[in-house]
Length: 346
Ligand code: ASP
Image 1 (cartoon, rainbow, N blue to C red):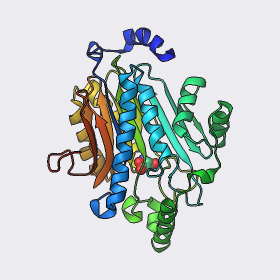
Image 2: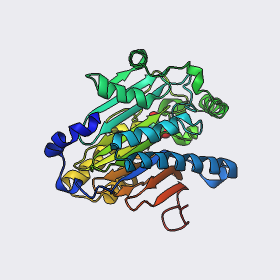
Image 3: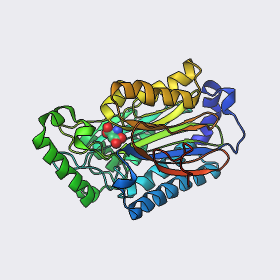
Image 4: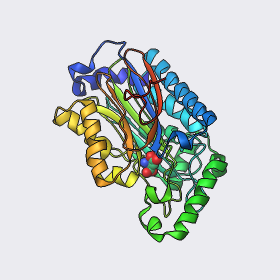
């Protein structure tokens, strides 16, 4: 209710007429990370688990939109489900730092008000996406980091856990493998190259368009396996891993964060839509398959525009992803070919 009451005021300033579409035109998309994800890397059972959880998250977010609630609520609902699943590199199931701990990053942006909130390097808040929302709604800041961010989250009454709550054997093994490789190849340590370390990503994110035509985006991650020295990726950085503006689009990214920061990927996609008049799919594709790929950056994005169009390009083997478009069609996909006409999408 609080947010809905803000909308008429803000909409007058920020929202273009195209945004005020049919109330039923709600849509949502989410990702669960991009990377070296192929049929050979997943058992049949794992694949089913991923598909089921992606479907559960996208359906829950869509339900929120159908109830007439803000896009921001739908994004948070979907991301929380993915954070609570140990399958993904966010919340429970987050990757390990070099030192064997977990440092989590998350961010959120509201396309109607351009309000944003983010946390970086938190260790104790159970759902970092809720901490990002608290920063946005309850502090005068956009980003809080480290111990201070955890202290703030606790002060807002969010559920706090011990750092080992995020442990999983699967991610522990990934750390051990990464460390073994780092010992063999010091360049890998220097550059943190995903191709050298065989990172399996798993960052999560969601974008949505609500009945008012407002957009929102959010992203949550454990970062990259074996990260050191308080490394922060793109996920909590507004304009890099997350961006939302009703005048263009909402984007959540996943991939090799250093590239997404330097190429301000989420902001670039929306700038192309807003200033160059590119369609969402053209802008998203040009950035992921052009700009980013040419630079050597791997990953993908999910994006939605003010009309509810959805784009989900990636330049890796696969990207866990799901969407419900404005016609209500549900898509759940993992591998590269799905949804591109080669394999029928679930
Ligand atoms: N972008 C995230 C990071 O660099 C990782 C990922 O998306 O898998 O921290």
